[in-house]
Amino acid sequence: MALLKSVDIDSGKRELEKLKMLSNHSHVATINQVFESGDLMYFRFDYSRFTLEEILNVHLRLDESHLRIIASSIFLAIKHIATSGIVHTAISIATIRFSSNGRPLLSNFENCTWTTADTTSNIDFAGLGSCILECMNGKPSEDLRDPAQIRRKRESNKMFGLSNGESWSGYKLLVDFLETLFNNSTPSIVKLEKPHPYVLQQPGYRTLTPFLELASLECHAIWRRAAVKQVGGTDSAIHG
Image (cartoon, rainbow, N blue to C red; front, side, top):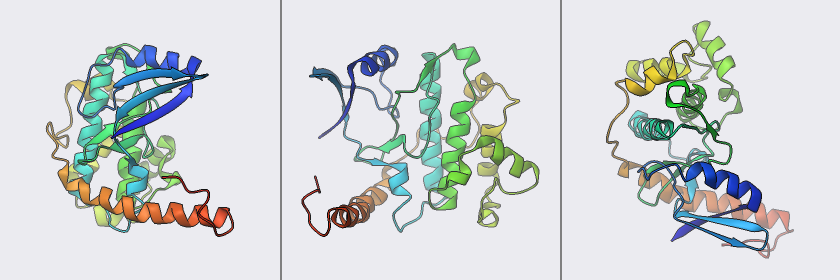
């Protein structure tokens, strides 16, 4: 199975120009095939149906061990693209996907920019930090997507704005990692060259597969109900 993404040809060519600089990496969704049809360009990726946003909508919550796998995987992806002079700029729970065996993938590079490895922005680290906070929150939250607001709340001794912060206060290494991700005074090159101890170099991701199985059941039920409601009680607008 594969995942297809369609874009207009001009946008596709711009994105492809950047992505062709990337070598394969186990945690980056790289393009396997490109073709054009009409006024659209199609990118073919390995199958990665579900996003982190969808995983956060199932009834089972991620625990700290799952967070560490996801955080480590995306940190390694950030490090890999930075060596090619690329900043993603839009890391979020919607741009982190999962392969069928649970492997986290950084995807959706349409807004990425070029830079040099020694001047790469901290924006990707802040994006990863927000994703981790939404995982800790247990569900998506737009209030946890503003790095400036998160820093202000942390400075006022609040747990990064989390409503359930007390339940995470005992995970000192995780909290320290979040401090590092949101710290703008530390150059990104330092974070890349000396990864925080929280980062696993070989994250084992198969423990994430139960969440994908739940997403295929629970999210499909949500999509189906929404589609049926939208078309007045029929299944005619539902596509597999």
